[in-house]
Image (cartoon, rainbow, N blue to C red; front, side):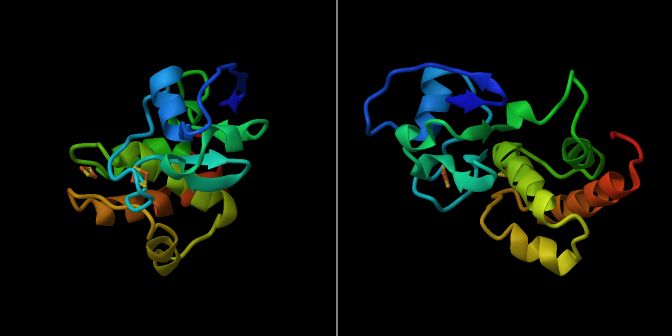
Length: 155
Ligand code: FES
Ligand code: FES
């Protein structure tokens, strides 16, 4: 598998999900297992350019495709714009849903560089936060979009 640009070799049973392969076999623990049934989005990763629930993809289906996890978003210790925007907009409380949300936001922004608030609400409908941080998350996405368009702080 190619994870965050690094090739990783592992041998697992065909029934092992991508999420379990990442967390239990390779120590990429950013993606979280919450519902384990494609409902909450806490396990979101980018697979072949598309955001997916990694609890509902088999590891063998991910062979040969680029996988990006939350661990792969920063560069040389510098937070990606969406990560910095989460901090600046207080977009997390307990933080358990946050890695999945951050990856979902990154995938959303890659496809929608100039979103409206309504676009953000709709585009992130697949991720749930039990702490109710939605207002902060939406503001973070709009702020990151602004940063990315203007090339301002955080790159
Ligand atoms: S753990 Fe995968 S969607 Fe909830
Ligand atoms: S910050 Fe607690 S579940 Fe989202």
